[in-house]
Image 1: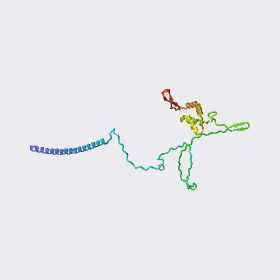
Image 2: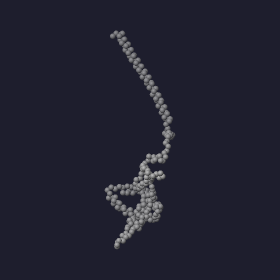
Image 3: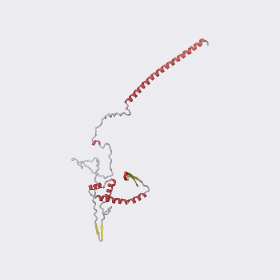
Image 4: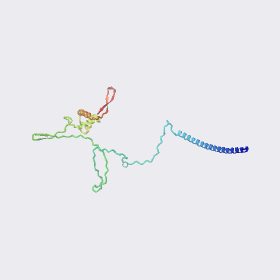
Length: 257
C-alpha cells in the first residue's frame, strides 16, 4: 500500500471516529440537560417539603403547650320524643318471675263500651310491683277435749321451740336474721316489731336470741359429722374484726366448711 493510500485510509478512519465522537458528545450534552432538569425538579420538591415541614412546626402545639379545644360542628338534633313516644328507649326491663303473680283483667271504663257487643282484639300487659308489709298473726290453737266412754281425747297444738313461750320458730328466725344478717341493734328490732303491732320487751328479745343460739349449738356436732362423712369438703374463709388491746383492731379470719 502506497503512502497516498495509507493517507486516504487514515483520513477515512479519522472521519468516522470524529463522527462517532460528535454523536457521543451530543448524547452527553442531552443527558446533561436532562440531569439539570431533574436537579431543578428535585430542588423544587425539596423546597416544598421544607415549607411544609416549617408550616407543620409552626402550627403543631408544643409538648408543654395546652391544646385548644375546638367545639364540634353542631349537628341538627331531632326533637325529643314524649315519654309515650319514647317507650323504654330500647332497654329491656328485668322481669322477676320468682315472686307471687296476680293477674287482673282491666276492661275499658268508657260509658259507650259494652262487653257483650264488643269484639275482643288483643290485650296489653302492664306490670306493677306491689310491696305488702309483713304482718304478725295471733294464731290461736283451740285445743278441744272430748270424752268417749271412759277415755278423754284432746287436740294438741304444734310443739313450740321453748317451753312456756308463745313465740313460734318464725319469730325466732326473724330476730336472728335482723340481728346477725342485717346487723340491726336490738332497739331497732323492737321498734320494727312495734310498728307491726307487737311490743316485746328488750329483755325478752335478748332472751329469745340467746335461747335460739343454744338450739343452734346443738346442731353443730351433727353438722360436723355430716361434713366429715362427705368425701368432698369445701372450705372458705371470711374475715372478722378482732380487737387486740391498745394496738387497734385487726382482721382475723375464720375458716368454714
